[in-house]
Each structure stands twice: as structure tokens, then as C-alpha cells.
Image 1 (cartoon, helix red, strand yellow):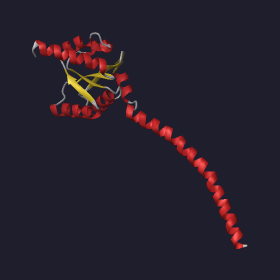
Image 2 (spheres, rainbow, N blue to C red; image 1 turned 90 degrees about the vertical axis):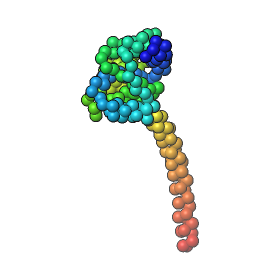
Image 3 (spheres, rainbow, N blue to C red; image 1 turned 45 degrees about the vertical axis):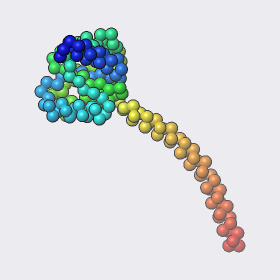
Image 4 (spheres, helix red, strand yellow; image 1 turned 90 degrees about the horizontal axis):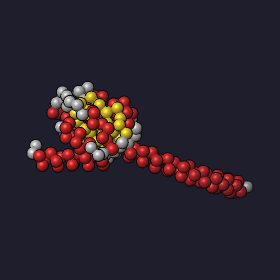
Length: 172
């Protein structure tokens, strides 16, 4: 990389660390190209990104961001996974690590909070933002359908009673 390319890359990474909901750091030693491509495609489909960068450049990019505390994690062959949704990157990385022991989660950051590998796994178990929105909509709709059923039930009962009296009147 030329010096200008490095500056541009560091600037880009700096904005990634400032704008991302969460960042996950992992070792990827031993992953094949196919496995790495699979991880990247899964992350991309979920709305995240996986990058492999030189540790020195990442540490420079971390300066002045909330995630500056994760700089010690960048030792050896590391990759970063990030997404705007705070749960996406940890969830995809954690799921991939369960199926492939060559991807070792080291930790990450959620804003200014530094996470260890257990924190990343705990974050991965939370529902995503879209799932939470779906649950919220379901909770809001449920009382409305119950109210409609409760208010419709007495009217239906009254109609049945009137229908029964009408049937008795016709029989008489």
C-alpha cells in the first residue's frame, strides 16, 4: 500500500469505528478462502462487513473513537466485523465461530463499552432490531384484537338471543 492509500484506509476505518453499532474482533488463522468468503457473504447479507487489516493501521484508526479500548485485541491475524445494528455482527460472527473452530472471538466494542468474548456471545443472543420491532408490533396489535373480540362478543350474544326469541315467536 502506498502512503496515501494507507491514510485513506485509516480515515475510512476511523469513520467505521465511529458509526458502527458494534465491532467484533476475532482471530482467523487457518480459515480457508472459501470459509472466509462464506463468512463475508453471511455478514453482507445481514447488513454487516468483515475486514482484514494491518493491526498497526487499525490501532491508528481507533484513536479518538469510543472503541479505542479494544486496541489491545489486535495481536496476530485479526479481522474486524461490524454493522450498524449492534446485534448483527456479534450474532453472525458467533454463529460462524460455533460451526468453525478456526474463527476465535477475542472481544469487541459496543459504543464505548469494551466487550470480552463472553460479552460478544451474550450480545449475539439478543434479538436483532428487526426482531424487536416485530415483537413490539405484535404486542401492540394483540390488545387491539382482544378489545375487538370482547366488544363484538356481547353484540353477537344479543343477536343470538333476539334470534332465539324470534324463532320462539314463530313457533307459537
